[in-house]
Amino acid sequence: MKTEKIIKTTLEIVGFPFVMANMYFDKKNRVREIGDLVNIKDRVVHTVVSECEEAKCTVILDAGLSVTAILKETVFARMP
Image (cartoon, rainbow, N blue to C red):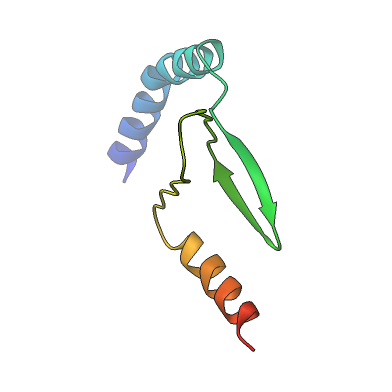
């Protein structure tokens, strides 16, 4: 039990400067994410909008299940 405590304390002391360096570089190199967060009812959707004058249609790419719930609500809301 005492050996485990010594090993854990040693790793914490040795690793601390690396944690601090990682936090510093993360803050220094942070970039603003692309897109915007849009509130739709009680959800927040991340959107990336790009415009092109030649485009004649809209393309929506989805990852995950978030839009499935939104589309389901939209379809059921339009049903008589």
